[in-house]
Image (cartoon, rainbow, N blue to C red; front, side, top):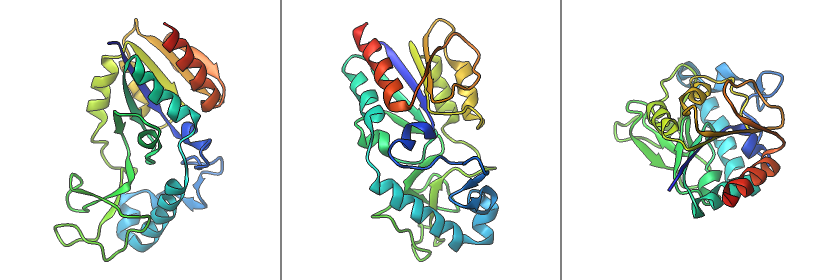
Amino acid sequence: MKKIVVLTGAGISAESGLKTFRDTDGLWEGHKIEDVATPEAWHRDPELVQQFYNERRKDVLAAEPNDAHKALAKLEEKYEVHIITQNIDNLHERGGSSNVLHLHGVITRSQSDADPGLTYPINGWELKMTDLCAHGLPLRPHVVWFGEDVPNLRKAAALCLQADVFAVIGTSLNVYPAAGLTDYAPYDSVKYIIDRKIPYVSGNFKKIEAPATAGVSQMVNELLAF
């Protein structure tokens, strides 16, 4: 069975009503990135950070997988499919995909501030400052912040190296190290890139300049027809 590896970004979830990580004004939901998405922000004002991610979690739980998420899951009828996502929502899983690797964590889980490998599911949308890990410290969102290592990066690169088909969907390819994963796709693999505005990418990619729902449907129909 041939292997499809898909790298997704905020553009695939935007059509489910989730705002992109960074808007054109450089803010995320009205906040400076350094105030809500860094370890320093958490240590400086943990209550602000906790409240911010509680609101984002509420948005994620209210959102529904769109046709792009569901179409990728349909590929599993014929292919071994691995989704590598930069998104912290769980819409790929809820859309039916079986193999999802989160590069930047997933907002529906919490983690220990002392041990990033110690994670817990969150019941509902609210994580409270009184919720503690096994070390007795307040739990934080299970999200990789700026300045932190990306623990799943090596695993993601290994998957990309094995791709018979490699697709990039809904990402500007501006955030590293995730953007560098495109360099790991084999030279002779079939490659797609789908976005409203196609970013620069080296290699022989078939470009589909369209919203994710339309572009992914086109790609999936082509691949299922092979």
